[in-house]
Amino acid sequence: MTIQVTHTHGERITVRSGGGVELLGYVYAPDPDPFEARKPYIHPLRTLAGHQVSGYRPNDHRWHKGLQMTASHLSGQNFWGGNCYVHGEGYLRLPERVGSMRHDGFPALDVGEDRFHLTEELTWIENGGQPWAREERDITVHSVDEDAGSWALDWSIRLTNIRDEPLHFGSPTTAGREMAGYTGLQWRGPRDFTGGAAFGPGDEKDAGELMGTQGPWLAFTAEHDDVDAHSTLVFAHAPENQEEGTAIHDSHWFVRSEPIPTVAFSWAFFEEFALPPGASFAYRYRVVVADGAWDRDRVATHLKGLSW
View 1: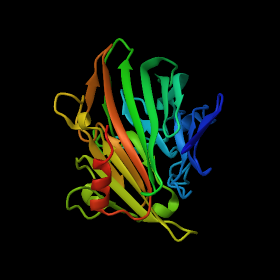
View 2: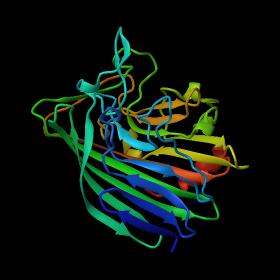
View 3: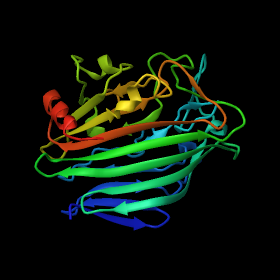
View 4: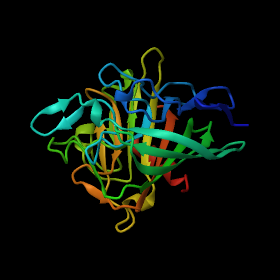
């Protein structure tokens, strides 16, 4: 068996490799601090060799927790967590704007020899307690490849507006801050990933050149402290995410290597989009977690071998 799954009911789901390495912990118990935008998240995230590739509550952003679905600017509420950006005033501590995502249940938990899939139902709740959206989330662990030293995680979201008015999705950039379009599925790397290398399928050379760009995938590689090893994460869009007329809005990369290591699939980087009452939107994403410092050719070849 290449994976093993343990469910601590009401708290977390842990996925381990056949060798006993904890590849991920999916935590759905409510966080103690509402200012950090209570919501499920994945941490730790590890390679097959056991090297940790996610950060949790770093001292610069306590609300950054591994890999998590977020929405930094949503109709005046903050489902990202922490301070809110207000044009002309900067970042302010406005706890009355911080929302939460409530875990409602797991309609499906399927474990196979080399694959794990969960379906989760969640409700997005604004700070005053009103439910604004219902989400169906799917997470799948698959393609555990000991020869390649990698495994893959798929994360999909289908979100439905349950208000009687539109939901407006934006970012700090749509609110007036240049090149700060973070929102959507976000990864925070560990401290030793600071200064790591980011690259895409084109000729970009660093995270700064990739910030705000579009592309089918983006990779982030870094060298660990404590152990003599590198790790690589690859963030990839499902094909329909970038098809005109299929996705509700164009996606762009939010990526930083300095001063913090982070990547987000931003669904509202430069412009807001609206979700009418009763309407839904969907996105699918993939994260490949690999041992070693992969280059552009190896990433591209590996992704071609993984079907959607």
